[in-house]
Image (cartoon, rainbow, N blue to C red):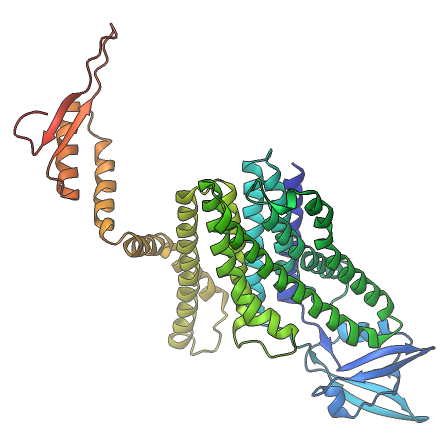
Length: 482
């Protein structure tokens, strides 16, 4: 129950974070303000911002915004939060004992695409649900507990993202993201060392048990540096602009290196392990890690941490990280391949269906606005209701069409056989005569699967217990009854 409570709390926080990111946009003036005694002083002016274009200089003392006195940095934050995008604020500055009025048009802080965040949050929620389902399925297995906390770290990294509002909830998002980023690398590396169970594993030796806690040491050092930077940043603004980016680059390097090392450990174990079960488990994990982690590590994390521009578009490779917990989960539950296959196909169907519904909704709004409203009021609530009604009416046939298309691609030649047998299975429910049912079954199977000879046998049940093998009740392709 404790794990279920953790999942519920995290999902609620994730939903709140998504809502805040969708409805809140942090505004900035382009100035890093710091306290110098009792004065609010401009420490740095970001390039290509409204403050730089308006002529604000480092060392200017801020006296008032829109005629309201400014005594603390919180007063600046409150003025920005009360403003709206594009509004011009009137700053009264003191420069060389001369007061100056400067107009600054505030603008949103540049950030990543909101669609990317939604995709990452979806992967984080998916990872958390996978970890919770595996833990509930095997609650007495120690490995599932480790895996559950690994997926919690995935969730923190991918779903939590502070918006800049800096209220209590926003600070929870910030530190949740930091905690996930710090704990994910050592948890992943630790899991790679202990799973699957290997009798001759280094981690089970005396030296391994002694040195294993050291993989958490970088997380402790980076976390301590980040906490110290945030605490001291209120008094020393240059700490926030210089130390925090350095610490964040260190965290990303730590994550990328741990992913690569974990994959190398598992590939080495795959070559050495002899157990068939362990080899199959490691195969799932290795391929999931290669496909999920390598594009992100080499295309984005390492280049950005080294100061080079990442490969264009590779920021979306973080979405592939969701393959890692899925691969781990399939290995932990004893590689139930059919279950994983069904989950993946069902997920593809519903993902394609959601995209189709969104496209239908958008096309209906656009066509209706162009034909009937002449683009004057595309957001008319009646039109939106009609579009939603159309989507609801088309939902079942759209899902069925996507399912059939996916089955045709996946099963190929077996698709027609599968559809014929599924349809015949429905017909069998209405026939209770054993002889007629047997003949129909033999005829349909031989016709569908192109089988030359087939016999359907039934084990007789004798009250005396003197059964003498199976009895043929229907056959095809045999000269005599087999």
